View (cartoon, rainbow, N blue to C red):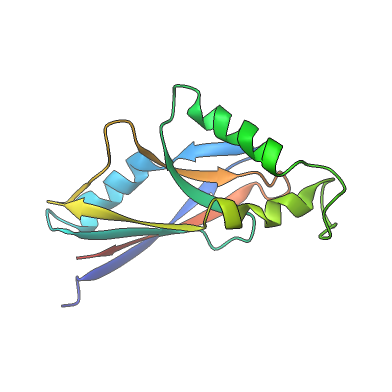
Length: 140
């Protein structure tokens, strides 16, 4: 059963602005190789204290709406106890409580089983960390 579990690290450049990065194509590329037509589970994990994974619609404004909602819930001001980094950076450390750093999704016949408008996205509000890693793991 050596091919039951396969993992890969994605390196994602998010730059110095808040971003929602669609990873769906990366997930599909990984599954073509790792799943090879099998059923199983895809897990994504972000090993960072200031980023998360969301399953949302992209391209129709929902990604911008998510960032706007996060600004409302987590304002980038001086209210936060965690104070190193850019002004308001403490909010970035609260983000994973709202947008978790992981998601597990079904894979059927080697393909990601998403709804019609769903995409798998990295959510990064931390302008101080322009490079992220995302671990993709397939369990067949």
